[in-house]
Length: 174
Image 1 (cartoon, rainbow, N blue to C red):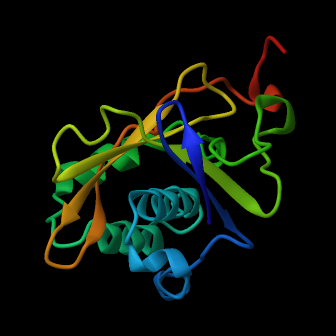
Image 2: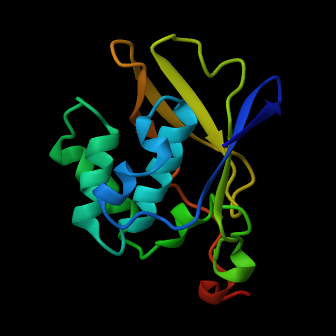
Image 3: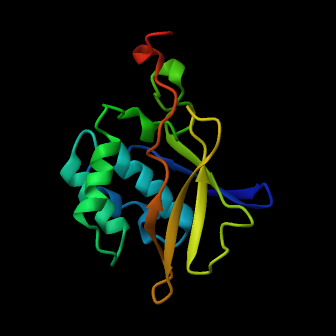
């Protein structure tokens, strides 16, 4: 993981040789220690990439990334709704190289650039991490919650499964 300064904050670049297909594969990754907000956020993007292909395994990953937080049926309904219109490309759009022109096919290794800003730590129990999408004009965010007893960051809220430009292959006006 590379760390560098960005917009008066900290930024990270996290790469995966391949995206995990099971919770056990995810837990074997170095980011699975969940010791930085960027690690947890990157793993969340990977879990959402799996969701259209294997909903149950992705749910296991998301539940694990959420730590002791109870995920309600309403939470899962919200996630299901985000994928209703066959928008499997949205989570892929956060990886380098993924654009509407190439049907959101990321470069490999799968690399995410994430950063925080001066407002990301307004509450010391939470951290907001920002990500750029190849299909959006403004960054999206994932909010993490710190568990002080372990020093781990857990997925709290995500604002990444929102509309972006359609891939050219699906755009009737392209």
